[in-house]
Image (cartoon, rainbow, N blue to C red):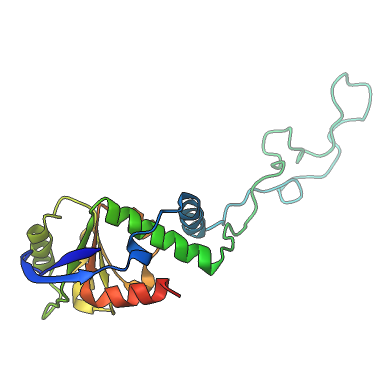
Length: 209
């Protein structure tokens, strides 16, 4: 599919680029997308939750009453989970929520995400640009020129650009990443995907393996 190339002022440069059908025009695999997003979100969890169990609660281990004849249930120490201040039964323990996915499935998920955005016409191709110094106002002007000032946007760079990244860092609705940092979640969790020309070849090369 062909997409016109815009400059950072939002004007048509008169050039067009050909997006690979094998990356931007496949039949989306929803289950692959689900698994990749699920893995991404699982990896964000710290898994540091912990509750004290019976052996870890501070308290006496003395038997608090005799075994028989009280008319109530048997009870050992005050650390019994049935008592207030006692241990937790089967409480949460520190753990990792991460799980493995094959590289081929993750590539399929990212291609599916790109294809979904392309089908929705939410992909913008922008010529490579740079700022002389970090300047949030300049980045806001780029967003306004593209009509994205009130929308969530993701800018994908071919290589790291400190000035562009720092210019966008204070804006909650806009993120700047390099092509190697792209994830299925990031692609789908945005209204508009802005691909700089320098990133296209790297994206297609990476996902065509």
